[in-house]
Length: 238
Ligand code: ATP
Image (cartoon, rainbow, N blue to C red):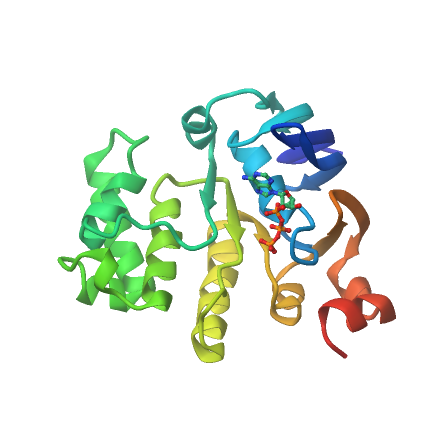
């Protein structure tokens, strides 16, 4: 069996002296879509931050077989992991197109960058219509699309998404998940998705992990977790 694209082994993470992750192990295969479920404060955002080098962590993390724990965030992006943080985080004063160019900071192929910008305008037509408008003037859903397109401008092998549906209307969220499915299935970009909307997330992902109080509590095929009574009660509200 080939090594997974991403492997976390026994990772602890800390804010000052507070330990937010306890011995977390998790894998994402090449081109795989994986969802991470958990209650508020369980450690989902911290787990993504540990992968991106944004929080103090110890243990072992490899990406494409290379150890990445302790590396700088920018180095990790160059290796092919891109992070869409919670709350989107577009540059409000920059235009849509400038935001996309910032996302391509790792690249030295202007023609390829221009091609990719056109591609994301096709996938997300609203971005094309508003290419010269400051990002801060767009709706929440449009800014979320921009944040995702910007992260994709570095051509990542793995995209980390922190609650992309937060604050979005149901219809907008469904459209967004459809685009994510295409990015996963057509481009083969692997996804690690933190998502409150468990029903949608389990529909997109092949496998799922459940985190509670900084520990991975459960993991398995998304279909199996979807059928699990405790998961249905806690995360699906059924
Ligand atoms: P949510 O769904 O509410 O975003 P989460 O599962 O993403 O929650 P985290 O944000 O990872 O949870 O937080 C995990 C734990 O770490 C929580 O107890 C939280 O209070 C704590 N924590 C998060 N950020 C910080 C910080 N900057 N300083 C100190 N403690 C923090």
